[in-house]
Length: 442
Ligand code: DOR
Ligand code: ZN
Image (tube, rainbow, N blue to C red; front, side):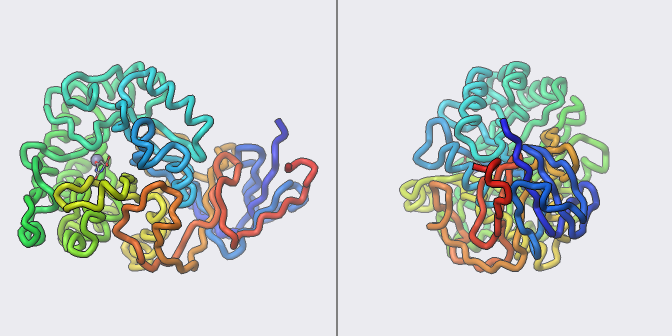
């Protein structure tokens, strides 16, 4: 196969993993980075992308995405979910196993990996189920699942309820050096709840989820991680209490990591009054105090990374009474704009720390050799216009679903080009891509 050489010219390259921030050029040969240098002759390239006045960063990585395929393709499928990722600047995502059927056997992971090669527009790393059918009773074949391509285990959507099962799972995952991503919610406390416990739940007359439903599971899992040496990754952490436990566990050297979503960093349960079912998810939006603790913990590095928990649902599953509405919101196409506008813009995070939380930090949790820009590495690259003002319009999403609480939000900063393995998978009209060697580029 002919290898195309692409030059990304004159961009402000920010690569937190390598402490790099400078205006420079990146030459890509085929699917890898060949050279990063302020002086590269454009004649070395077949294609030249003008990134002047743009930010060039390692392709964003989201380790918590629901692609819904197989089985729930009215919500999303491999092609639409991964185009939504590309549109949001993500070059790699990890997909959760709560599909139909559940991703709980090596054969199913193998089939998915085969399909991804043909249907996915970005890199997808499968997360396999911790227990058969997500039922919490029988631990799956971790060795076989890893050999088939799983990069982590999770029963996401459900918690691994029994301590004995989580204990076994952490021991077995540790032997394979893979993490377990826990959806931390004690079912005996959260059963039948709709949103966060508090005034809003009372006003709406629905049962509220106490914040301790999250922290009791985090506390238990930290104890189990300490005992087994296993790595527990706390999915979508939402409470101050949870953060306090993770902070302490990290100080003690226990192998625990955590992710937080843009919505838990930006919204409180008050927003349910405005957005209704589009502000309903698990764990629920909490209080301002929780939001502040999450922001502080992310800035301190106690929370390792940002993940979207992209959870597409069809309109008919959301346009119903709050109590009956499906849990979850889409996130891939709004995450970067929200982070740049509200976390970097409001000085909660530096630009470098925000990019780190969306690149090499999630990569390192999953043990992926990604999330940085260096010679010889995969050419997964996102080009961002930091000044671009835009309004969130769900009708413009590439996702099949529109369930977002951020509709109409005015944001500043947007991805304008997404490159996966040297190939431009999405770009908008503002970026100039010039083919200089038309013999080689068809
Ligand atoms: O709100 C949620 N939706 N939380 C989860 O953990 C699962 C997700 C889903 O699959 O819809
Ligand atoms: Zn979850």
